[in-house]
Picture 1 (cartoon, rainbow, N blue to C red):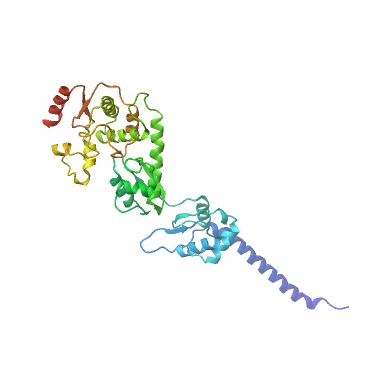
Picture 2: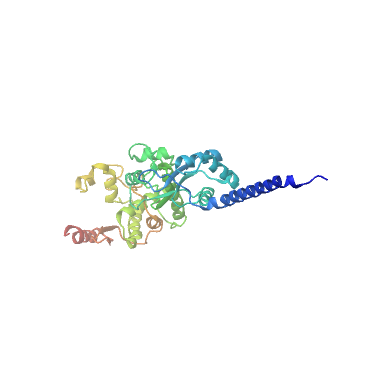
Length: 345
């Protein structure tokens, strides 16, 4: 009867290979399970602390893997591509501008891309600013792509943005706006314009029933005058009341900020008598009614004051010099207030 002894070394060797293979599979499985939770190695450009990556719409998993590697994720493209495919979330990844900080794990990066957590920036637009101020702030904002027309002409800007008003002055709501890194300047301004449209509509819906204003556009113009005349909240509705009283009786508004706006860049900070008599579309000393456009960005308080003016008999006001205004019913009272608060000072 043949002996089975000679087969034992072969069986032993086979067993050893099975054990080695099992160990390798176990090690690979362990590494595969642990790798997504370990910090990704990053190649940072000199002077930077983050890896900057753009993912375009419609990118495939292989293209995203290549983009991650090229941006500074120091992992072979094939490994990144395999990881994205095995995750089952490759189709969830969203286009945008992202930043990867040291210490970020592969799992965290995948979550960031799937949730669309883009790198964000912010810019603040301030009440009372003109288009010139707004454009300057947008162009100086962090990581904005300047696609605006040259200069800061309100008509050219309105045309570029497609604003129905045809004139951009006053049509951006003053607020802090958050935008993805490398957003177009026009996109940020359209966001501010949409906010102004929304706020103006809300204010107009709350308007007093007997206003001498024919449209929300006129309310915006009046609100811009109020915004430039005072920063004192308690005086806004009273100033709006004075302007409304004058509009009702056909009296000229005679508001200096509108005259100054009409002077444009020629204004040197000193409003002279000749400026008050030089006719421009914005000279409310020479022309009756509201100016043709807003003269600045009004905030919510000024919008509300314009549509809910105080009921007052005052037709005049003058700055006291402390941020507040003195209101008068007659020209004699007003002249006395001017002598007290302006001429003596």
